[in-house]
Image 1 (cartoon, rainbow over the protein chains, first blue to last red):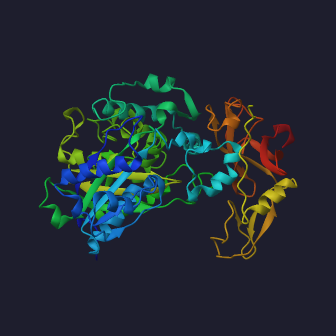
Image 2: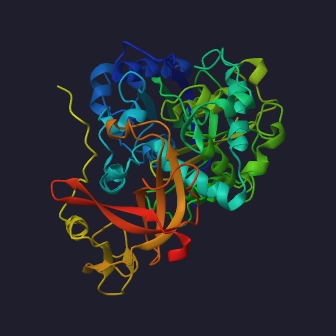
Image 3: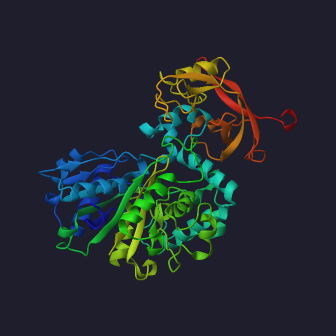
Length: 390
Length: 141
């Protein structure tokens, strides 16, 4: 049977500085990250024959043709699953390469998430609601249920009600991410330590989610380059093999309110068996996990959805340093979207690649890292799962 | 001159207009499939259970309970600047569908999952009314 497993590899990664404040446009950020990823791979812009522009950035394939001088773009597609788009786009890229349509795919994500498109200001008109949010916009915004922190707060509260999950569990995730960020000079929170007490004292945003449960509105972009496994062997650095990739969707996909089970992240729980099955690996085989963490509750529920623990047991799972460097399953080893940066989740894929290449600071290098699982999660539990290995 | 910020208005469409027309008349309705009888909300043109494309707008009891909630401590829209902290609940109606409602009758200390609620209607201008739920005192249950 045909499979995507092992057919493609990530051959280059790159990112801009992550900042809160920038003079660069979103497109300029994308072009900088793209050139860095191509340089990392030892490729030139003229080698690119496919581009996957990111939905939330609003860039177009034409932007990349115009600015990178791409002469023969053979494939382009934009996946519209919000925060899940980046890994869903990796799946599309692998399909295009394996199907012989393209040979060298560039994926870029991120935006002026602090200087322009601030998610916390959505309701004040800094961003138009995405099409999938039409019903939320009509039926929930008039009630003051206006931004992402509020939407996911309902789910987090229900999880606490059903399973006894506590704010301290969210705090343990935030603290683990912060410790990792404190060893990562590129992280926005590099110089800012955080204790569990600090987390508990941080101001409430949308109860039960506190300030330190929320991801960072960031200016920046990150990019990766994917080629066939065969071609990857001749490039500058050791390829990171894509062993499994899959996407899943929300039920329903247009609100949290109508969820069949509000305590689950069903897009990821649907995608995970496909991604792990394709890779021929199990969650227990993963040496680290880079989990899309718009909010700490998402991280907790993602651990459940991927099968690292049973549904409802995410709280106890994160206790005792299990998810920190040196623990059984280091999670978000660059700091995650809550402490490194939020560039539409692309930085999680970049971090997995650098961990597998042994390119990160020794203090946050996962020992003997051979495998990693990465997630993207967006809109109302659209999800995508990537399993990679050295 | 400063103006008082207004509550965001629902962006009604042809698909959803009957919901808002009923609300303006003091009635809470959701779509009911004319083919299989399944209730659905939010509105959509096709029944995902039987693919029926005809639906009626079915009156609900207006009673339910709080399925989950959040308390906003930050105003994400100017209308709520003087209303924080305010409670927003996910309501599960007796008939099984869910809706969002601001809960002006509840505070962070009085809101809880499982609390029985019933619908009321708040005029929000332009002839529109918003279905807003309130807690039912347990003696009235």
